Image (cartoon, rainbow, N blue to C red; front, side, top):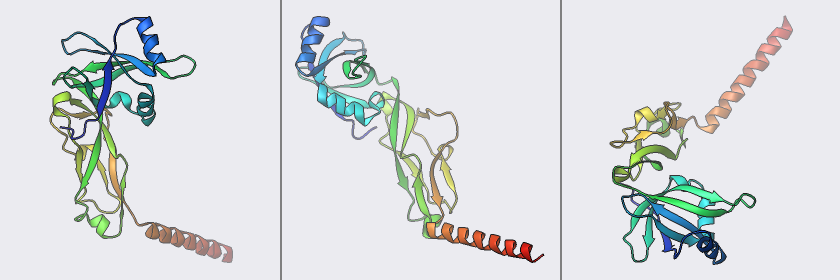
Length: 213
């Protein structure tokens, strides 16, 4: 299960309707609602500046949060909608959904690399290129992996490691429906440069031989 689910501190919003929402915005808050989980919806509000910072970081809707509300038990939620001002494009309302243990959600999972010390390609001077430091997976809320572990101990220079080479956590599957590359071992830049010089030299020789004819 994910080791570090970020906390999201919110406040209970007193009152509902447009008047209460406008009052929250005047106070520098963004109104919202938490629904699902077989309990009544909970009107909330959260700090505008903090929300804007999180939105600008990206993937807000694909992040699992541990919502903390004073007077209520912590609950895991995921954002389902962010309403924005039609002109200013700033958040005006946020919807969160409580998650059951069996709920399926899309999350970006960090990639953890193992086997670097035994990798023959790296021992020969190759360079590891982590094409996807995160992979988006469909997972259940009760079985969110802390990371996606890939083993590069058998990779030679020029080899790729794809999603089909990875043992996925139980119940998880990639969002992308094709065999995409996660990591690769590239040739040393010095070797690539030397190869390019050789190709140029061969081209020059061929040109000279052609001129002699």
